[in-house]
Amino acid sequence: DTGVSQNPRHKITKRGQNVTFRCDPISEHNRLYWYRQTLGQGPEFLTYFQNEAQLEKSRLLSDRFSAERPKGSFSTLEIQRTEQGDSAMYLCASSLARGQGANVLTFGAGSRLTVL
Amino acid sequence: DQQVKQNSPSLSVQEGRISILNCDYTNSMFDYFLWYKKYPAEGPTFLISISSIKDKNEDGRFTVFLNKSAKHLSLHIVPSQPGDSAVYFCAASAYNNNDMRFGAGTRLTVKP
Image (cartoon, rainbow over all chains, first blue to last red; front, side, top):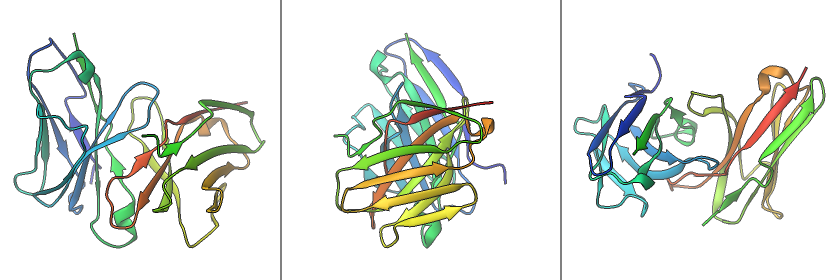
């Protein structure tokens, strides 16, 4: 198992364009999370899935953001009509659904978005 | 709202000495606390955790202390090594709540 994989690692886009990030979690993890991290801050929760069901969304997740996990495996995070304020590191994490492992998130290396 | 706070953005210690990283929280519903370590160009990696039923958890050179009445936890690293130089994030969650909250991080530098 190669851990949590995210791509692309870095995306530079012009304001108004759409971008999509992909996350491949650890295969036996049913939970998948998206976080956003800006400079000098810790990760901020955006949304999480248990299998294919999106169970929670933060108020940080505006209408321009949509996340999917169609088959309960990989997930995509799409940002439409990007704004400069969307520039951040987007982190994906996964965990088990039960037991002690449910509290421990394994993070990917992140996808850095720069909106010009 | 900053429910988890790490008030020291940076800390520098000499190799072999103790590093103490601090974290305060405001939400009394938090019952599970974690420390993550982050190297540049990598995602945060889990280091150590503690549940609210304990006040101390030790794993090798790393010990986490929890003071529930003060809503404060700390991470002790002893002895500190240059390879410990990284950003350390404190995180907290409430039972059955998947919105794990993170502090802003403390950058630890261990000098040889």
